[in-house]
Amino acid sequence: EAGVTQSPTHLIKTRGQQATLRCSPISGHTSVYWYQQALGLGLQFLLWYDEGEERNRGNFPPRFSGRQFPNYSSELNVNALELEDSALYLCASSLRYPGNTIYFGEGSWLTVV
Amino acid sequence: AQRVTQPEKLLSVFKGAPVELKCNYSYSGSPELFWYVQYSRQRLQLLLRHISRESIKGFTADLNKGETSFHLKKPFAQEEDSAMYYCALTGQGGSEKLVFGKGTKLTVNP
Image (cartoon, rainbow over all chains, first blue to last red; front, side, top):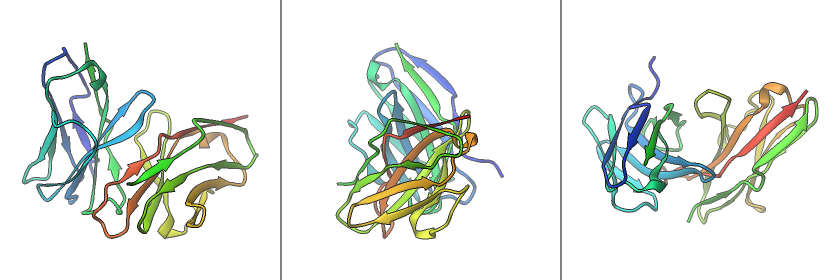
């Protein structure tokens, strides 16, 4: 069974541009989570989608947004990129709630120059 | 607000020694607590969860509501236990996000 897949693996953008990251959850999982892992800051919760709806949002500015599609895949958009947005972005999926086991993807490295 | 604190960024022990990775939490409701682990060049994965009360790879963790702690313990560390360990918290009921601590890097020396 395929795990959580993310694309692209690496992305380089310049300040002010927009970045789009994509995630495909494990088959049967309806919940998708996005985390930012910046150097020294651990895993910071970004967004949680379930059944196409945003369920919860972390303390990030509105330029971080996303959506979940009918097939439960998801994308994360970061507008007006800043240098501090450079990080590993992890996607994870689970059955409906985060109390269920969460399975992580390998992440997308975003570098803003 | 949910908060998870892992006071040690780095922890180094010798093979065969006991190991304890500390985790303290702040949460007003009934918590669900987890330990996730990331081995070198592998994905972050679940190690154990408090409601299962199980031992995985020799590790155990007990929820202490009085001390708001969920420390991870193993009586005899092995070199293959070297990894990054994250404590995580969500609320019971399924409507709360899963929040992680900043992680502890465990190194088990031969």
